[in-house]
Structure formats: structure tokens, C-alpha cells
Length: 204
Image (cartoon, rainbow, N blue to C red):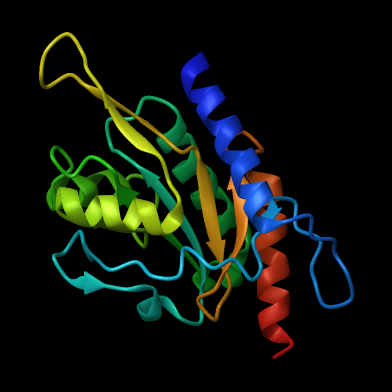
């Protein structure tokens, strides 16, 4: 991850923390390892097509803890690392792993075809869902999640890269965004926060 991306990630993390407010854990609020987004008034909708061409929304996954990540398949480091960690956490949970859904939203629909997304995600976990839309739909989804992305020109028109927010959004089983998980924290904090949300759901 280059210096520019690290700086962007840091800025985004600080922004999200400010938006979420200085929330403290209490009897009714889990002590998340990531940034607590409970009550956030964004990341409420996500309407795009999956790798099989079906229209999907957050409501389709109610009953599962969602890990939503915005990236692109030609990403050299952040994206594969993140998806590998989500797959690792899902596997480590045993039977409870079926209650976790990884969702990858491409910020590069120009190159990330449905077929490419399907093959890419299958290499991590066949249950992962890839979402894509038009340029306008992608912009709208990123705006709803307060996600940054921008094309970085390469040596040829086809060899560009994408700078993007390097973090995951974790949703509870009711479809509400709850945690902003920073890139680089590792799989264990992600697993801990997912376990808290699964435990919370078990108490309902």
C-alpha cells in the first residue's frame, strides 16, 4: 500500500470516527475493535447487480452479518488481503460462518465484468457476493457509504489503478451498519467484532 493510499485511509478513518462520534461501550453497546458506527445515518442502502446479473439490496442478506468492502479485482494488495481475511474469519467461525456474508463492491466496473468478479471472489470463498453497476450507480453507492475512489492513470489507458477507501463496513443481522473496520488491523479484530454482532443477534 503506497504512501498516498495510507494517507487517504488515515483521513477516511478520522472522518468516520468524527461522524460516528466518541461513543463508549456500555451495557447495551458492544466494545468493538473497529470504529463504532451504531446509529450512523449513512450506508443504509446498496442496490446493485451481483456477479450473476441479479439485482441485490441489503435486505436480501437480512439475518446475516455483512462485511461490505469497496475495491477492484486488479488491486495489488489491499483488496486481496481484505477478502482473504474475511474468508479466514468466516472459516474460523465454524458453523457460525454461514451467518457471515462477504460483499465486494467494485469501484472499477469498466474492467470488472460480472464474469471476472465471479472468478475473483470464488478464489477466496464461493459464497462471497460481488456487486457492480454503471459508473453513475457506483458513484451513488460510494456516496451513500462515504467511500472515496479515484482512477490513477498508468503507462497505458488500460493499465490504470484505483485509489480507494481501504476499510470494511460491518452490518448486523438487521441490516444496520455497525462497525468501520480499518485496513491493516488484521483478521482477529474483524473476527471479534463479528462475534459480538452474532452474540447480539442471539439475544434477540
